[in-house]
Length: 440
Ligand code: ADP
Ligand code: MG
Ligand code: MG
Image (cartoon, rainbow, N blue to C red):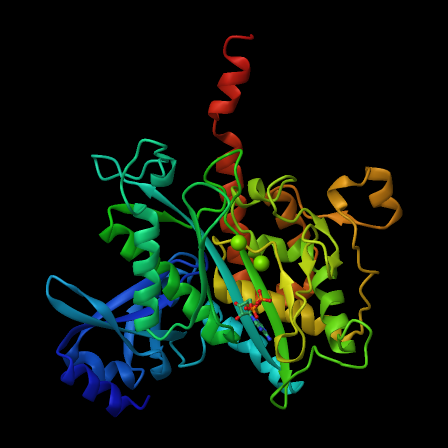
């Protein structure tokens, strides 16, 4: 969209506020709301804000930042706030010298996309987004109760969660999402909404928007939507499987009809790169203490670093479809990840595999969970980090993933996450009291 078209649309639809959106390092969507009067200036990229107030962005002394709106992301929200219409534009963050800011996750993804572009590739990503819907209590705070657990005697004709999910899908469609599937997931209260794959940057924007829309619509139904990866012990957690392919000259570069598996050499190298960097990447794709409680055996989440065409237990699965749909499905990312940083490191790892011709190990078509530790060792099957601290240690040893993040984001990410880990280890958990309070 051209700036003048945006201004025309804003006038035509009586939009009162425009939210300029960007994400911080942790992936939380931030907003600077402006009125229509400031739109001209904003579209020219002249709008400044104080970056020191945003998590992990800058030191105080260099806090002047510019927001550069990406006009292609302009959109009017289908709902109103107290009767007024609101639009949004997603922005890149620029520094005081009018250069892309090194701490801007969206600019970081742009850098990885540029690297792919120089090799002739464009990355496509299709995410599978899972989340839980919980009731809010009489105090308005979220509970862990799900509607569909209400049981046999609940005579409500339609499940409240199902109704909310249908509303989410309709709203997303109004906002230009092509919804490919929506369904109830395995766990009570768990849902999944998949939308069609797109160019990497667009998909990352869509994931950020998606989370915002899902939370907003849930609230309208008096439900709390959470993207926390493992809210409840003993049932499945929420993942965000990433379907990834590279296109070259308009064709899927992962497809090769001559290969027995229908996969190109580039696809094998890309898998090789993903597997080689999987441990360090997990700090970004699974960035919370809680993330690693999902990555345990028994709940359809990956634990072991391997790839397969048939089995769903390894980290990477190759779905059966070929030609345009040829893709790798990376199964460990979760819904707490920053979509820009997660996509940037996945691309970086895969491109590293192509550049350095990293052959993946043989594919594993047996169920890895049923193997003995000796069998896994013999086949050279390693496991993902067991917790956030371990993942951070691998990230600190992986120059390729660090380069993908850039020095600024890498350092601030490590600092923030080390702090998170420290605060977690110092906390006394209910589990400990259950185990020890009466025993000792
Ligand atoms: P299936 O029917 O085999 O389950 P779909 O083709 O419907 O799979 O796709 C499942 C997910 O993978 C969707 O998010 C879809 O958009 C995505 N996807 C399909 N083709 C590609 C591709 N070439 N690159 C990236 N993602 C893709
Ligand atoms: Mg699922
Ligand atoms: Mg999947």
